[in-house]
Length: 149
Image 1: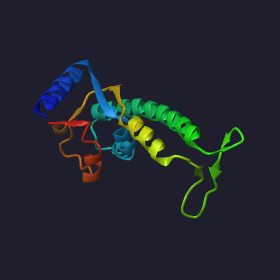
Image 2: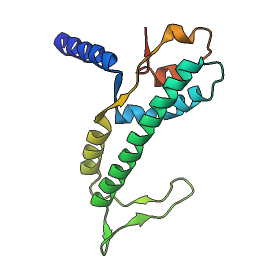
Image 3: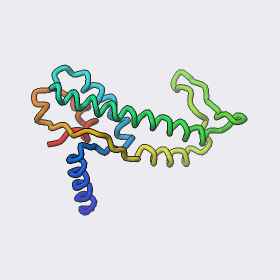
């Protein structure tokens, strides 16, 4: 376990030199709301705001590709009506969605997909560079991968 941690820290140091951040797709998807909240904060210094904007654009491209892959995965596991995937109509509590025939296999592949790590250009933001900026704790927790020391 200690060896894995030291390998991860070494990779992070190497990426910091190269100006790259690695993040799991699932983590990127879950952090978009917090990232957008930061982008809307006028008290963030302009340099950090610029860096956050670049990171947000890069993550957006990765999330778009995820959506394409997820749709293909849904269509592969959906029951078929002829050659088209069967959809379950929307209700008051659920939006329209695919009729997945083998949910266990679908979930297994979907978990593999969201665990995929992507590397985006960018550097972590130093917490000290945001001194005096009031960021909600939920946003800080959602973006722990973006901040350093």
